[in-house]
Image (cartoon, rainbow, N blue to C red; front, side, top):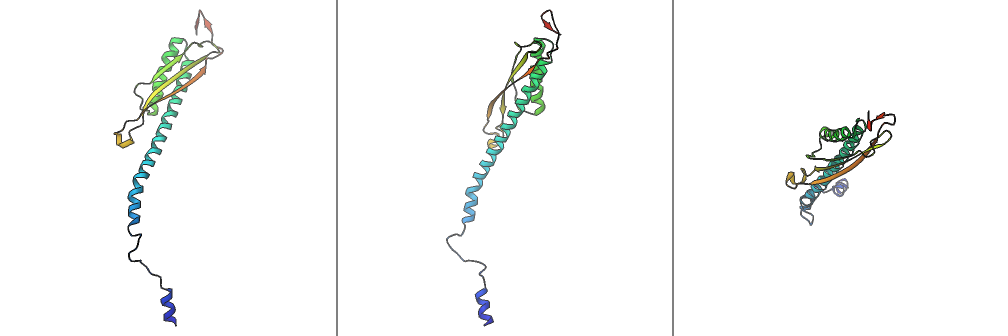
Length: 157
């Protein structure tokens, strides 16, 4: 009786043959490339968002630097220089950024506006650099000119 009960409790360790043999290998071979593509797309989306945030910060820094200048010409130069410095400091691959500094409101209590366009290269992941993805990222920012600035002879001091 004990021997008969032991035979019934025995669980087979391995099935021999059947319709599912090798299906795990096929699933792995089919799903692995799909998962790699999804992962690369997620990384590229993250890289794009990071570049966009760096361009936003560079535009903001450029507007602030321009608003601290003493003349419209100095504001133009300071805005362009700060935008480039911020992009290089952040490590954004933007070889020739287009910076526009609007100084029409450059007066005490006025506003300086900066527009920055960067063609960021984020495609070094796609196909290990075989497919270049170069996208334009544009952002604008403005900063107030100090209200207590003294203006003499048509220029700000």
